[in-house]
Length: 240
Image (cartoon, rainbow, N blue to C red; front, side, top):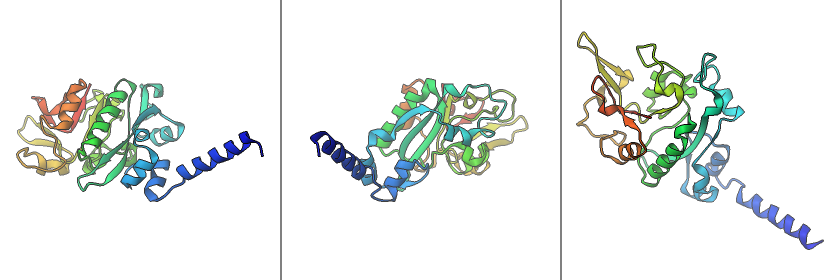
């Protein structure tokens, strides 16, 4: 056997060992199933750098989006969107696989921000495509899901949301609701189940606060926070 052939066989064997699932977490990382818990060892074996990336929307991902977050009426070219992979910690200290579709204009910002949040163990409960909820914003928010792109109008209007271009991110949505006082004095809260979290004096691991790490990172990258708005408060929302 020639030295070249032997080297090729040895290299193939080493790669096989390196990328053979050692546990369920490693297998989840390779198949990239958002929402799953993975072990620190699995992340180390897989390579943490490979867990944070933005890439063109694949046919597989686009098939999940079509007719949901990407309806037939969508005017945003698929080529302008990016599929983001990221890890995040939940409030129980578990490492979870996250995913998001965003505009290419903010994709690098989001990869950098979520990498910093992961390093600091900032808690984010869930980060899955809104298509897992049939692009139903209310249902996604009730599950405290963090998401970005969804071609839709602003709630209660015909104006396209920043989410329609993939230029806004909603984070830990249940515990950071959208709140607006109507003309008749009643409060409109979204998600509806987020009403207990209107009182911002109460603390919760998923509460976003002015000056906390998440708020600082997004504002440093040029995002505006809905928690600063006057006509309403959208505590979950960051947009560019």
